[in-house]
Amino acid sequence: MPRPSKLLPGLLLLALAVFAPCSGALAESVTFFPGTQYALEVHFLRGEKPGPTVMVQGGIQGDEAAGFLTAQLLSRAKVAKGTVIVVPRANPPSIHERKRAINVDLNRRFDQDYNEFYEDRLARVIRFLVSQSQALIHLHEGSGFYDTVRRSDLRGPQRYGQSVIVDSADPRRAPQLERAVRQVLAKVNEGVTPKDWAFQLFNMDTFNDRSRYLEQRKSLTYYALSRVGIPALAVEVSKNIPDLSWKVTQQLKVTALFLRQFGIELEPPRLGPEDLKAYPSRELRVLVNGSPLTAQTRTIRLDPGKPLDVRFENLPEGAAMSPVTAVFASDRPGFNLAKGPRLPLAPFQGIDVRADGVVLARAALEWKGAWPAAEAAGKPRFVCWLGGELRVVPADGELDAVQGDQLVLEGVWGSRRDEVLNLKGYVSRVGKNDGQDAGQEIILDPNSFIPKFVKHLENGDLLYEVVRETPKEPQAHFFLRVKPRVVTELTVRDQQGRAITLEWRPGKALALPPGRYVLEELRGNGPAGMVQFFAGRRPVGVGQAFIVAPSDEIVLRQATTFAEIGKMPVNSVVSEAGRALGY
Ligand SMILES: [Zn+2]
Image (cartoon, rainbow, N blue to C red; front, side):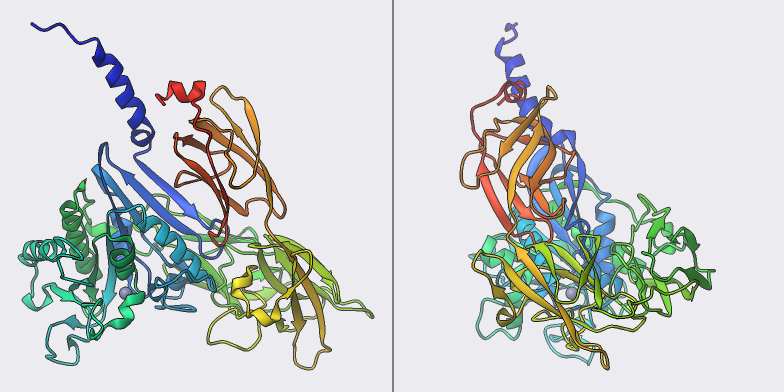
């Protein structure tokens, strides 16, 4: 009998150390753009066995419910091998309104790195996630039924429903992609009745200049295949099939089969009869300034001139479909009061409560108390929110901000009118070019402005102008002075609990040896929470633990735009803590 090898315990230790960071967190959720109207939730499902990473995304267009429900269900899958990145609802604002697009179609923003609208910021994170993946499955719900030849208005090559779309069937561009699709379709279509609801392979031939689908060159799947070089496909169910539960079941089946084709071992969740019955949840309760708002509520009483506090109670944590929730005021549709501030300076009619865009409750408002009074004489005072903090700026005054900050223009103190406040050079909503920028989330980034309205000052600051354009009111204005974002220091705590403060000097090496740390603080200018910290490719929140591997770099990004502020490679000299981890 051979003697047990002395090497074995050592090897085992090393293997444990290498995989410990992964197997410790099997399922992890990360929120990008926290505190904004377009906060994006992403799930990382990591199997015990190493394997490829495959991304599955739904909800890029808010009127395609099957796709985001399928992705949501998939986030409950048990992954044994490989990693599945699930983005259930890629475009939450479009889901709140059940619209394909708010400003621009997010699935037409992947041909370049735009930074004009919130959709472009979401596209940045989506590209970042795709760049970590070895395959992409994109879930949609299309109109009609795809077919290679036109058979009726609802069935033909101009329709997308019940198809699996690829941009190329050329094996040199996408090895095995067509074969994988044919194998999956053969399996899934066995169980599809009626037969004319079977899924078909839809090759858009997007690389070919004579393709009739050239606009697909701006799509995510084309980006993934042409730029990242990974197999990518879209699974479309049909908007013309009324049974949502059937569609989600089928889409989930197709997705699981593709995941296996791409090397993932998983146990998909079962879609129980209860899952969609309760959707999108009748149980949601909202508190408006402490008063409950339910489907039975008819009116809500509010205090003029006091900030609104809107929050969801009993959010169905872990509930089957975890809808995205919103509360809209009647005068500012699209602005989610559960995620953004409001100080009523003028009366409005009512509010509605939504879950995945479905209105669950609606209440009229009763205003109780006196409205704030304007000064008898003197300059009007502008009310706004900067990074969630209330600011009052007199006419001709200046408000200091930092690039990437979040601004909401509220109104004019004491006016009681629907004020029109125009942030010059900024378009709050495409197609609604009335100059009104009040009540919308504005991210202070020069890329979102028409350049001629931005004044560049000698010291590097930018100056923007806000003009009161309310009809029949005297014109008045104030300025926003926007400084570049500066980060000076960061503090982390090592495994012994020692605080380590490091100077932030982009391009230089960071004296942070490989090991495990907790992020304590980031110091710089502007409101806190506007910088997102990444160790390697993992976003890390303040108070969260992270691991630094030998060749990692620390990257800081604007929390609202994902724009890089700077990066520093870590010092690869291994610390005590790093040695304990096996580095
Ligand atoms: Zn779609």
